[in-house]
Length: 475
Image 1 (cartoon, rainbow, N blue to C red):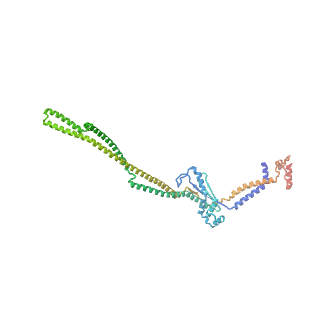
Image 2: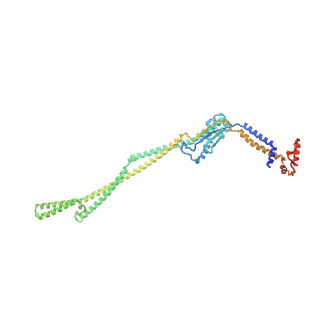
Image 3: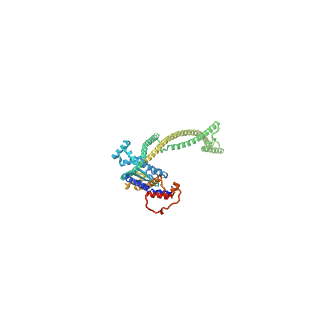
């Protein structure tokens, strides 16, 4: 069917199209008047996710913002928030509500949960796409009730959001409080063990006895080494002296004797006296008193020299015995000092273990105390990153039904319905309305067509007019 044929059909069936349109418009107006009015109130909240968290002091990463906003929407729509709204407004205190709950549920569940599910169906939460604003809208039959419920939802959402942050902190604070008691007891036990050990061993945390004993051990070790060398040297000289005496050699050629200055002086004095005796003897004679005196003096010097040589030889033995005894004493002192150092070292090691236990217990207690202080502060906070931007007010106009919108929709659907009914009638009652209908519908040859505007208009009976029009169209 061409566009021209459609226009001819719609012009011929205009009463059907207009009638259908008017009926649909009347129905839309009737529904707009008869349907109960509903009012929608909207409260607006702002979620400050870009700033610092007032509780944790952290900044939310940008990649987590979409999920964070979706979570906030889910919290607003949660059953817990709806129950808080019901309890805040005391909606279940109405006997009518309780009676209706008993009728519909038979007393199953609680009226708070039942009513919370009902009001949640009328809630509409819309987050902004490019901002941190969330619109909380609630629809009801009374404008004041709608505003009250929307505001209650906003307040309950902020309260629930704060509880979701604070409750875990309270649980953590309780946990750390219990842990602190155990850690404090462990720290006290470790300190007690350390104090008892220090009193028993007479140690202190700043005890320097080990350092002093180590220094004394080093000093004794040095002395013992030197004493061993001296004892070895004295023993060598003693062995040399005994070899000289065993061979019958004169001990005055020993190195110790040769190095003795007194003996050397005595030898020099004896040699000088002998030289003087020889000189005086040649001058005065052998029996001269001076000669006799010099002989007696030389004899005394010889006796003294032998005594000094014997004394020097005895001194070698005495020196060897003394050096050996000194080395033995130092060896015993070194052994005793080593044992003392070992005892002190073991004691310091045991005390170091106890000190580490105390330090470890102290660090654990300090860390738990710090976490307890933080979680305790978090559990007592009353701040949140959500605030109310606009509180809901009672709407002046209903959100449903909307007469203008209903009429516009009625106009659209009525027009489409009218056009559809006109086409349906044309299909059921086919009429010839143009030359194209004759050609396509009856396959008649068209010889000529008279212009309707040039035919003289006169009054005719309707049945005669239709017949003449049909003949004129055929001719």
